Structures are given as C-alpha cells and as structure tokens.
Image 1 (tube, helix red, strand yellow):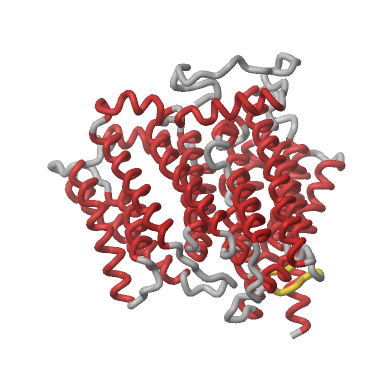
Image 2 (tube, one colour):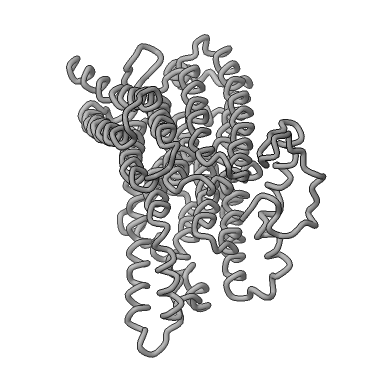
Amino acid sequence: MDLLKWLNAVCALAPVILMAGVAVWAGLGRAPVQRRWRQFNLLALVALAFSLAGVASELVWMTDSGAASPVLGDWLAVNPFGAWVSLLVQLLGAAIGLYSANHLKGEPRQPVYIAALGAVLAAVHLLLLADHWIVLIAAWAAIGHAMHALLCFYEDRPFALLAAHKKRVTDRAADALLILAALLAWSQVGSGSLSALWAHIAAGHASAALAWSGACLALAVIARTALMPVHGWLVQVMEAPTPVSALLHAGVVNLGGYVLVLFAPLLGVSLAARWLLVIFGLVSATVAGLVLLTRVSQKVHLAWSTIAQMGFMLLECGLGLYLFAALHLLGHSLYKAHNFLNASSAVRDCERKLMTAEVRNSGLSMVLAVPVSLGVVFALQAAVGDQAWPWWWSAVLALAWAPLLWVPKLESGRSAAVFARLATAGAMAAGLTLAAGVMDHAPLGVRNDPLAAAGVVALVGMGLMYLGMVTFQLRPRAVVAVRRWVYAGFYMDEGYTYWVLRFWPAAWAGAGRDAVPPAWSPREPACGRSGS
C-alpha cells in the first residue's frame, strides 16, 4: 500500500515538475525555436502519460468516500476529481502545443509563448493538488501571471492589451478576496490546511466567520470565471492567438468550477455564498445566452458561449448540484477546446447551411422542444428508478436540452435529413441525461446538497431565457430596441472598463500615455468601445 501511495504522489507531481522545467528551459535557453517546440511537445506527452497513470492509481487507491490522499504533508493532496481534471488539462495542453507549433510558425515571440504555456500548465496542475490556502492562492495567481504573457503575445494590438489589463485588475481583486477568505477560515480552524477545514466543518463547527469566508470565496470565483459584469476581457482576448483562446476557455476559466466543487463543505455552511453564485450565475447564463444569438463572429460567439456556460456551472454549484457541475466542467472543456481549434471550419459550415437553407429553425420545433425534452428527462429517470434529482432540476435540464431539438422546417426532399437530425438530437439529450445520472453516483468526495428555494428561482430564470431565445429567433423585428441592448450586453462591460481605467490607468491604446476614457453613456452605439 505504501508503494501505491508513493506511485500516486509521483504521478501527481510529475506534470508540475515537467511543465515547470520546460517553461524555464524554453524561457532561458538559446536553442532554435523548432527544437524548443519538439522538447515541449515531448515533455507534454510524458506529463500526459503521468496524468493518465495518476487517474489509474486513483481508481485503485480511491475509497467509496473519494477522500483526498496526501502528497506533501498539509500542503498538497490528490483527490479523484482533481486527478481527472489534471488529465483533461494535460491532454488539452499537449494538443494545444502540437497545434501551436504549426499555427505560430514565423512568429518572432515563440519562445515567450512556449515558456508561458508551460508555466500555465504547471500552475494549473499545482492548483489541482492544493490542500492549503497558501498553495491555492499562489497557484491561481501564477496562472494569471503566466496567462498575461500569452494574452499580450501580440503587443501591438490595443484591445489585447486592454483585455489583459482588465483581467489583471480583476485577478488582483479576486486575490484579495481569496486572502480574506483564507484569513477568516484560518482564524476558526487554526490551520491553513484545507483537509483540516473539511474536518472542522464535518464536526459541526459552523460560524459566522466561515459563512463570510464562503461568501468571499464565491465572489473571488465569480471574478476569476469572468461572470458579469467583469466578463468583458474574456470577449476581447480574441485578439490573442487561437490556441491561447482554446487554453483559456477550456482549461483556465473553468477552474472556478473545480474550486467550488472542492470547497463544497464550506459552501454548505454559507447560505450567502450560495445565493451569490445563484444570482450571478443565473444573470450571466441568461444574458450571455441571449447575447451570443446576436453575434456573427465565430470566436466572439464562442466567448459569449463560455460566459453563459460558466454562469450555468456556478449556478449549479450555488444550487448544491456539485456532481453535475463536475460533469459540466469536464464536458465543456473538451467541447470548447475542439470548437476553438476547429473554428475555421465554421465558415464552411455556414456556407453549407446557406446553400441548403438550414439557417432558420422551425417555430413548431421550438414550441414542442420543451415538452419533448421534459418527457425524455422524466421518462429516463423513471426507467432507471433514480430519484436523486429534485423536480425543478429535471425541468431546468429539460430547458437546457430543448435547443438541441430545434430543427429546420420540413420541406420536400429534405424530410429524411430533418428526421435524422431530430433523432440525433434526441439521442444526445438522452445520453446527457444518463451521463448526469451516472455522475450522481461518482465517488468524488462530495455529495449534492440541493437548495430548493434557489432551484425554483433558477427554473423561472431559465424559462425566461428560453422564451427570449425563441422570440429572438421567430420575431426578430419585434425586439429591435431590446436587441440593441442585448447585443451590447446591456453595456455592463463598458461601465466596468470605464471604472477600471479610471482607477487603474494603463497605456493600452499605444499612445505611450495613460488612457482615461471620457465619461461613458449607455447612449453610445450598440457595439460599444470594447470591440465585437
């Protein structure tokens, strides 16, 4: 058993060491760029092998409770969910490295890119091992610092510099909130160990200080995951290289979801924290879900999609559905990385839809999608005899799956394709429902803790969002005035940008001086000043 523990620790630490080593070597070495890429990709694949071995070790070592196993005293520990996220992040990192080696050929700042990419991956792996407040805060700050170099890869692009500056300001605020959360929890537990915190809470020692600690943690995660109103930088980083967007959206922003699942015991004693997550998550999911319907740029569309998905993920954590949030994190990472790295195919797909007249969906399918989706979810629950979900969550899931069932109008010569698409969509809805049911029994060391009152609020909010999506599709001319505000994200980012640059000026416009914008007004054009 001691040998298995040792192997588990080695597999957990190896990706951190390998990625940190390649970051230092790429940043300080003088080897040709292509050789640095070969070294990076080789070590990334070796780290991937260790991450895979770590998951296998966890499956053998893991108990039914899914408890974490210590790696380095009270500082580092491996937990089952962290091992799976580590494997996912390293898989994305290896794929992004291989993609970037070709995508960035000829770019003069490739060594900086390689070093920063390695540093981001090393810091992410370290965060996933954190079992102490200090490690968690330091690793998350290191991720932001390394990401800054990637976001500013093109130093002559003003909006890339503006986005990086806004992210840096937001990250510093999140760091301050995390430090405050740590101090409050530390004062009650007498230790910075997260395992000690879980034991303290399990023993029934809830307090006002822990409740405030949970609220500060929730606000820090809201800032780190780019929820509204601090979301604008995530849209503007489209100025960075495409693989940077893939890494950010698939492996960095969603770390907030991991942290919330990890801190589920603390959220359980902080009702205010859970309501903060519900409110910010629901607003972000609803507004961003409508905004993305108004955007035509593929990468900007994906950025708004990420904001909506992060809002939904934090909503799930606020509702106490931590196991579903874990599944959402893993699925969203794979989906978003594929979409960004395959973004160029969107042009061909759009041309195909225009040629086959598949642009408009049938109004009837939009109306029937909800009852059909409800039938699928409740029928599968009844079939497998699983009553783990509250009724309101089953209804929310049905609303989430419903857009999958939107299909074009039935016309002669195209009915077979429409029925095939409908069958595929139904199978996807059924498969996602079953996957969520299986995940409810995963031994990840956390269990669901539904918050019924917030669940009803979430159901109403998701219903209104679905109604808005249908209205935008079927009656676009009837909502022209509202569409202008929706396109601009209700000008939340413009207001946030104004105050960020007012209190922390930055020479982002390339003029060599601090840029303080004129007073912002919602009467400005719909596109705002922060790009598309």
